[in-house]
Length: 458
Image (tube, rainbow, N blue to C red):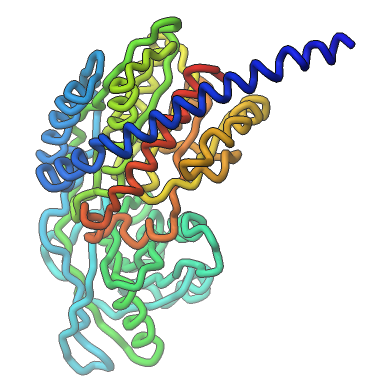
C-alpha cells in the first residue's frame, strides 16, 4: 500500500517535470533555429581566418576571434589559457609525378599531400621505383623488395561498414606508422591511399608519427582516383615516381585554449565543459573539422544566455588548441585537464563536438552504467530534434584527458557520419559544404543535453 501511495505521488511529479523540460527544450530549439548565430560565426572563422594549423599566424588570429566571439555571444567571462603546441609547416606545394613506366619516360601528375608532422625532402625530388601493396601483411611478405623503393600502401575503406568511422579507425594505422615500417627495410619514401571513401580525387592529410629507431622518410597521401590508377599500373608495370615535399617540424611554440564561462548559481565550483577544437589543417578552412564544433560550442552558450537561463553549475565553453598535429598527447586538452587537476576542480561532465556539422543522430557516453541509465531516460525529450540514440561509448580527443585525470564522465555529439570522411582533412572541408539547418540542429541537441545535465546532474 505504501509503494502504491508513493507511485501515486511520484508519477504526477515526473509528468510535470518532463512537461517543463519539454517546454524549455522547445524554447531552446525555437531560439537557435530562429536566431542562431552558429552559421554566421562559421563564415567568419572559415572565410576571414581560414585554415588554422597550430603554431601558424592564422591560429593566433583564430584565438583572438574566439575570445571576442565568446564575449559578444554573452560569456560572463572569457579568457585565454596558455599551452604548448606543435609547430609543423608544409613549407611548399607537395608534388608527386609518375616519371617512368616500364623504363619509358613520361610525366603524369598525381594529387598528393604530405602527411602532418612528416619531414620533407628539402625540396629535392625523391625518385624511385614504386612497390605497391594493399596492406601490411603483403608488405611483410615482400620486405626483401623494399630497399631503395617508394612503398605505396593502398589500403581502402571497407564499404561494408555502415559507420565510415569504423573504416577510418581501421585504416588510420597506415597514415600513422607506414613511413617507419617501410623505412625499417630501407624504403626511401612512402605513399598511402587517403583515409576516405569519397568519389573525388582530393588527397587527405592527417598526422603521422615517426619511430626514432628508423630513418625519417617523406610521407604523402594520394587522392583516391590517383591511388586506384597507380595501384593498377604497378600491378602490370614497373613504375617510377618523383616525390617532392618541403615539410619541417619547428620547435614547439605557445598556443592558447579559449575559454568562456557562464557562472553557476548553486554549484559554481562544479564544472560542465562543452568544447570543440579551434585548430585545423592548413589545406582547407576546417569547416566541418572542427569549425562546426567550435560554433556549436559558442551557440550553446549564446542560446542559454539569450533565454535567460542561469545554470546551477559553472559551464565552461572551451575552444581547444592543437588537436590535429599534436606530437605528444593533445596539446590544449592536456593543459586544460592538468590545470583542472592542479586546482582540484570538480568536473562533473564534458561534451565535445568533433564529428562535423551534419544532421545530429544522438550522443555517445563514457560513464558508469547507472549514469548512462539516467541519461537514457531523457531520450523522449531530445527525440523531436533528431536524437535517435543515447549510447554507450563516446567522448572526444580534447576532453579525454579530463576522464584520465579526473574521472570525468564524457560525451560526444554523433552527427550522421556518411559524408564526414569525404571532406575530413582535405581541401573539400570548406564553408560551402556545411548546411545551415543541420549545423543549427546539432546545437539544439547539445544545448538540450547540457540543460538536462545541469538541471539534474548525474
